[in-house]
Image (tube, rainbow, N blue to C red; front, top):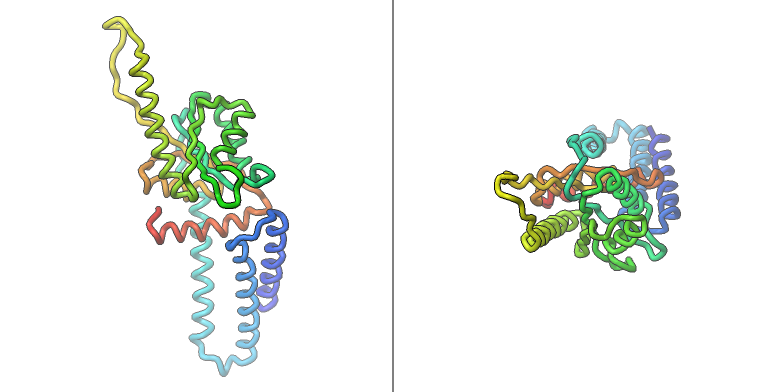
Length: 274
């Protein structure tokens, strides 16, 4: 057990160094790997001391530590299972609106996560040419422009018609992405209704029948690890039947993203965002 814990500590330190060098960004969440390394070392030292002095250590102490570790591991595994298998399978074709969630924009251009999402959006538009894309993302303190503006420029450059794009530039979190995008969709629907009222299509009586408006079908496009949380937040914020559209994430940062997403889900659940 001791050598396993020491090995885990070494792996955590190495992974921290890799993701920091690879992404060029040090964030609060990236330091979690150093915390994991420190915990592994403490557990390794504690386990070794316990094995040497079993007769002097009360049984409740190792039992409590093991119980806490197992509980934490169980929660993590459960959340990860929900992330990748808990998304309800829905038909994501012929949607009316697709909310494309933003990601970091660097001084040098789009981040890999954002580029992957936009390439998936382009692929979706090619298969569903009537869809409206809601580009959701404000401007962070370290970003040269808003994420929505950068997304628009990339999509237009790659042949997407600008009239198919609705920009939401106020959000700074996933919750705000969903809430503000819902408002943007409602405003766009009202604008399009007004245009139809101003430019009505005249038909002879008896050549048509009035039917009720069909429900607006909305999808959310984001990275694979992020779809579950986005859908759960959408349910809370008035989009109960949002279809999930996922794109691949960076393989080197994938494990880090999964750990970060687990923490985000627990936080959002705790504060009532989902």
